[in-house]
Length: 255
Length: 237
Image (cartoon, each protein chain N blue to C red):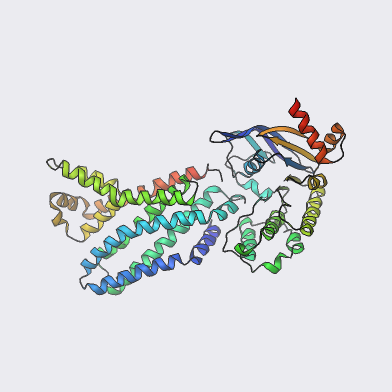
C-alpha cells in the first residue's frame, strides 16, 4: 500500500497544483496579518476564507485527480493488488497532500505572527473540513462515470453545505422564532460539517455574546472538552460515512 | 487453467454475456472471436476482475476469483488500448510494475530487448505513438513470466516486423505449455497462433472446439473459410 501511495503522491506533486494551493493560502494569510494587527480579527477573516475555499478546493481537486488517474487505477487493478488497497491509497494520498498544503500554507504565517487558541482551532477546523470534503468528493467520483458529472456532483455537495443548508436553517429559525429553538438548531448544525467547523471557531473567538440566547446555549454546550469531542466525533462521522459508501461502490464498480 | 461457469453480465438493460460456460486448459491457445460488441472484451475483463459478473462463477487454477486479487499474479494481460499514466516515463513504468508485483521468479525481458524499448526509457507515455504503446503493453504482459496470457487484439497497430516478433514470442510461450487467450479479427494470425476456437455471438457461445476439428468438419483448411461456413451453418439452424 505504501508503495502505491508513493507513486500517487509523486504524480500529485508533479502537477504543481498543490504548490499553487499552498502559495495561495500562504500569501492570503500573510496579507490578512499585514492588514490587521489584531490577531482575533485576522482569524475571523481567515475563517471565512477557510470555510469557503477549503471545501471547494478539496472537492474540485479530488474529483479531477480521481478521473485523471483512471489509467493508473486500471493498471493497478490488473495487477495482483486488492481493489480496496488501490482505493484507499488514492484516498490517503489526496488527503495527506491537501492537508499538508493547508496546514503549511496557513500554519506557517500563524506561527510567525504568533499562535493563539483561536488560530489553532482554525487550523484544526480547516483540517477536518479537508478530510470531510475529500471524502465526499470520492463518493461523487465513484457515483458517476465521467469527470464533468463527478465535478458537478461534488460542487453540488459544496453548494448545499456552504450555501443552501444555511439558508434552510435561517428559514427554520425565522419561521419558528416564537419557540425555543436551541436544541433544534444544535441538531440542525450537526447535519452540516461546515456549520460544525464554524461553531467551533466562533466560540473560540468569544463573540458568541452577539448571538443571543442560542449563542449562550451553544457556548454552554461547546465549551470545554465535551463540546469539542462532540463536534469532532460528528465531523469524523461526516468523513467516514461518504468514504465508506464510496469504498463499497468502488469494490463492485465495472471499469 | 480457467473454468467459466454459466456467467452472465448486463450493463443496465443490455445483456452482454448471456450464460457462457468454458473450460480453458494449459498448453492450449484459444482464439476468442466474434463480431464487435459480442462480449469478447467483457469476458476478458471478467476474468481479470475489472468487470464484476452478475451471476455464475469463474475459477482460475481452481480458485474462485470473486473479490479475490492474488490470482492475478498468474495472468499477463495485454489490453486492446493500453492506457498508462501520461506523466510517467517508460522506464519508470517498468520500475513501478516490478516494484508492485514484487516478483520472485525470473523476469522475461525478451520483448523489451527485441522491441528496443530500453532506448525509449526516457520518453514520457503521452509522447508515444499507438504502436509503441502496444509494444509497451506486450512487454509488460510477458514480463513476469505468468502461466496465463490474455492478449486483446495484440497485433492491431503494430508494424509488420514487430508483428512477426510478437507472434514468434507468443508461439514460443505456447510451446512452453502456457495458457493463451487471444482475441483478434485477423484470421491468418489466429490460424498460426491458436489451437482452439471460441466463437461468441451476442453474448452467447456459438462454437467452441479445437481448430483441427473445425477444419475437418467443414473441409476447409483456412481458418477464415472454415469459420464463415460454420457461421452460415449455425445461422441456418
